Length: 525
Image (cartoon, rainbow, N blue to C red; front, side):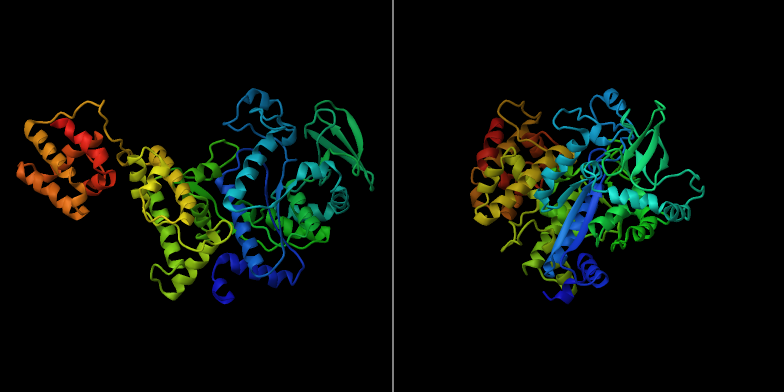
């Protein structure tokens, strides 16, 4: 596919824009980041993967790219999420840096690290491997001492920029830095004076103690978000970083940062606004602070890594969409399979659609693009096969004679997701379990029992029927015993799965096979 055709995808369009606006460079720096104040949710993941897709597009254009992901873990612990154990203990750490807060699950050194490591372990699964920057360590090592001093030197210019977007001007004694007290560890402090060089004096507002610290040596001083963000753009030479629509709103942190970065001798990065994600059936913005979130592990329970990437690669970032766990899951897998078929020329598409779907498929892959399509099996049919085999993916794969060795691993991943969906998220009428010898018999009349026995006789020769022929046989049995077909179907489902309805009967029986179906029916002889 030509470069011109590829540029139709938004990731390629932004890659071209970065090169055009930033000029030819040895290395382009693309950035993302978040405060690990709670479970990192799928809304946060939208930013990570949006950057990854642009990084991928830049690299495919032959560019060297540094992809940095900042953990803003020197931010203040402001609120205890609902989903954390020992909330009373966590309350005692409010207003301290989140790296000072303990991990109450007792797995990691601190609360921030617990949230960070959960994400870092999983991102490679979806093909994302950034360089992680831990801001608490960087501040504590004095890496930003020059940035802190520059902010103090440019105090009045920064204040003027911030006041342009404020209804109430900042106070005359405002300083562009905040301090974590060396007495209490909290940010409940007031900056009193700066000596024009490296000395900063502050007061702890709880103990009323005062102290002067050296910006080159202290780990107590940091920049507030609206100044910290542009300072780091300049420090890292960031060329591209998107942000949510809260940051991109008029007067938001991106508006102020693109002016403040100039005071640090930097330039604003190329950016775009990405929209929020909701969960199907639950409106509103997802929030880490409430603890009521859907995280990447939750999504990967239902969607394979490639389909997870497809959800984002196939949607423009400024479009709001919902992550679905309901029947939409069937359609999403169907759409992904269609995209794959178009890529491999197995499904017809006009030139425009082929170009679009081809690029989406390429960006959806983890690692190298496969040489052949995955095993194309409808998701719902796969769910039925898994229920036939009680969730045994190997048994399902063994029952499909035309699976290529190179397709097995991808099919096994899909089996795992399908079984989790059918057992956890699917509507109740999608779920069933074949009756066993120990289950009670269905309450049938003598005529109904005779019809079931006749069905058993036909199932004994199941291999002699095509699915269509067997469907006709079922109708013939119903007619022979003068039972309305809908009623006979209902009787069969009661006998087989103890439900009034179920999968298409002839195909269902053929899928299960006579070895599983015949013993159930013969109980009525």
